[in-house]
Picture 1 (cartoon, rainbow, N blue to C red):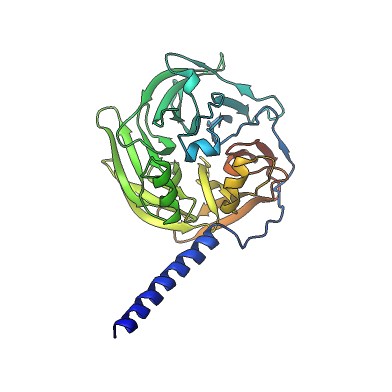
Picture 2 (cartoon, helix red, strand yellow; picture 1 turned 30 degrees about the horizontal axis):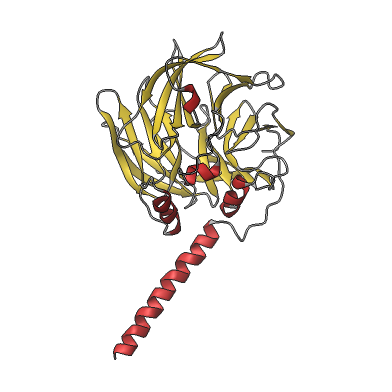
Length: 368
């Protein structure tokens, strides 16, 4: 009898293990073959070679680009002192795509030598443009830095650095006011051991936080596996959050107290990273990693190539949950053009494709 029970328990354990193993293998994309498909003429934009992890565009076609995120080994093991060169913010003008990109000068009282930008977001009003930047400090703490954009001088003036108890593994940020923002914590643990096993065990410990000057910072939605890019519908009613590991986008309704209510999950069957939103159509533009399993090796050795993937998601209405979701593949590339796509930013039938630690590509949209 005891032996029979042990056999049942062992079989149950083995079945669970195999199910998790094959599910993880599927999510990591081991089964995929990548074929090149481009939406029109594409080229590499000169001037960026240390990453273009996130890109966000003003209503007039000015694209801000974060570059110089920590090397992969430092992100996953903060004990490794690599002391990389500080990061930069670049500007690209969609209205003049053949002009050189410009590095924006950073002005103000903040630690310029400890600047390693990750996710970024814009807040526009009639008087000014503000750029919110996720920054990872060398002491293994995170912050959101707010800058004012000075267009004539092509510079960013430091206004405020936001930190908080719930801002500990920040990946992306979404500005919703002059000093208010949502942000994603892609892990719960901040230790190398804990972060590694959150991935291996597929634990849903990530969350979304909200900061406002009066109410400070707080968690407004929790229980998600590696929440990544975050953005909003043009009317501000819904938030979209990417889960690169589970390959879906979660649609949240924004409540009056700024807490979030999940209303829908959209499976996109690829490792979605950052989300950009077309202001006019409400379409989502997704920068994705088709074979996430290859990313660690590539990010540790950039001579290797890894695939890139861009999707456009169109909704049938402005009200979620969306009953009809049209997902269109815009670009697939085996790494020959661009490796490790993390974001796709669209403006007036043109597109920029950013990468985690590599170059940036520009495409004209003619075939979609």
